[in-house]
Image 1: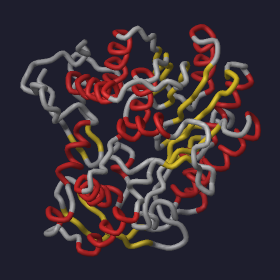
Image 2: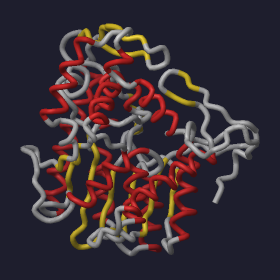
Image 3: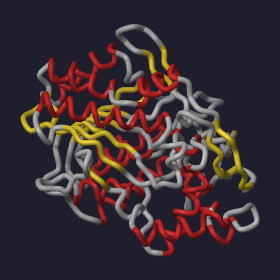
Image 4: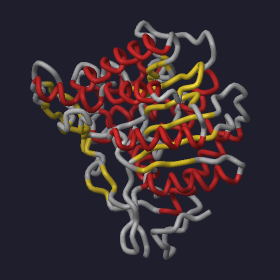
Length: 390
């Protein structure tokens, strides 16, 4: 079949197996150009391993750190007439390339929130690794069922306390407009914390510790985004901010059990992901930020951010912020970048978007998540959606 992107709102319902494989290989090439990381953990788990920062973490650990990895993600399999999810292709493309360099990756596809998958995961860790040196938690899901109570929680992206009027962007049409967001109820806020906070992260670590599959010196990382004051009304000061604060609390609890330095929340920069595309104001902020950072030579995508994290922020004596987080969003939040973004913000309209922002870069990065718009890929070619090229 000829596979074309089918975009609806902030999702793309198709993915290209050849494009996804090329995208994985380009990220691997970036890491290899920067050379090995001598003190990288060698037995690494990545939860949410198939796209974005999770995939980048698996690539850096494997191809710069020489690690063997176990990944977990929830994917959609392809059929003869329907493409799989981008993550389904990414996982298999990653495994093909990892085996070429002598690594032995393992991927589990299923509901990482469930205790059943956690049990299977522990069994496979015992068989394959014995113990783990590091676990990266990079999950972004809108719904979670609590395995203890059976209750299903759905997250919402809303402000707290009062309605918020905010500038946002229709990424399909390029229209810049004002929108009013109603505040979340207490139940909605509680549900968002249950889905996007640190409860499942801590549950993972507790069960792994109880099973004695954490090696001496084990470390775990959980990725977050803090952002600038321009996005705070809907982000940090909203339901998402409550969930992010819960991550900090759970990191402290994990450190209380496993020791200082065992758990860190890592603040990363704004990038294009499926999750971030659904958050009002964030796409508009991203289009401006990308243009400014590109003009200053500071722009990074997922692979550049995680490569810098593993090379410069995981050693002893790394500087932490007041909440004991590791910060790799320093370039985004630098005075030079934020001053220019704030200067442009009130000037943004549908008419000035092309001058002040880079919607084309945003759209390009969004399509790349699904294997589209990648130079060197012949999208007119008839391909089998069930086959990932080696």
